[in-house]
Length: 473
Image 1 (cartoon, rainbow, N blue to C red):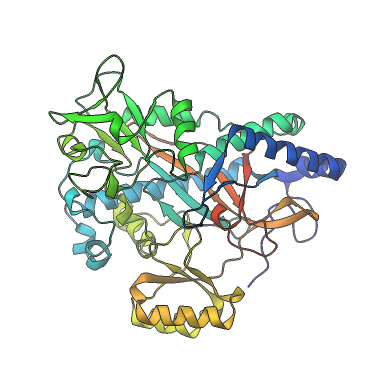
Image 2: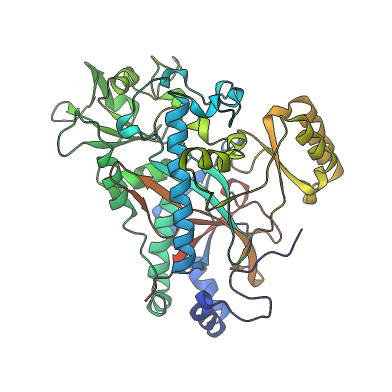
């Protein structure tokens, strides 16, 4: 594996311009002051209750995601390149979804194999021919990006269903501004706190044509036992809209209403944070107590917008990901601005043969896996793990893809032994409304806190950082 790109320090030891002010500040601040502020940040996070639960653990206890107090910094120019690529990619995802639920030109052209759509567990036949408001499916996308050198960003994953993590982006910034005002005085950092204004404007722009001039928006949560419940309540509060559960809504004459103390109130846009399977027991899982009976009939009638649309999961698994460069070319007639990680599709016999012969060099992932689970990092695996994956691949090759082990860039991180480089990724959030695309500068930087680790997921011990985009003077 090649040496990782250090985002702060050049190979000759000089400091990259974006980090100049931070580097000067770090060289003057005593370690005990950093440690005190780290503990203070942890105390604040605990007090306001920013926690998550890990499903499958026996006690499923609420955990605090570790927060690193040293920001990750991007220049305005780097961000501009990145955001243009994110906008292009999200546009292509929306066109792909519209096509596969209608004319299916991309399948007829043989660009994407039919079985990758029809046999995909996230494909929703109910959406065939269904008109969605403004022809948009993915209104909120979380595109995971990694960096490998000064100029190159790779997309690692497209999250087109219900991407989470934006509450951490906003809280991280708030805490940094409270604890390090002197750092903000020295750097012109682009704001992220207007994200919720941008989100509300996006949601309102997506209201169906049948709604009035001030559409009613709600956030639909599965409830307090969901691992991301903190984020659901945080966003509803910041948006100034109601946080509802399925039992708070009902459908009459194909219109969705919210129960209020003043009687029923029409709902136009539902920012839903529960999966397709559970949103309507009459259309999907009849045993779901989380959804709203009749919601899909209101949706089919064009009287409510669901954000994101039903069936978007068919566009964001890891097998479809490998076709994204071709999808961009097919719909936009453009070359991708952001690279894809080279990917071997184990469903193809020659790809599978290569992967089986090189397991100790590759990262192998489940097509529908998430959270860092169900993956093999070949260079860090022992013989037993490699043989276990060899057996899995032979038994069900369609369920896996493989990729080279990327040397993810590193950022300075405050750990027990002091300041040390740790690998990072970035999840920017792309908002697509009927009027325009909005991308708040920055996103959620996730950091692998263990030395050498490439797994940044919070469920696997990763932490988060504030992400700064420097405004150009």
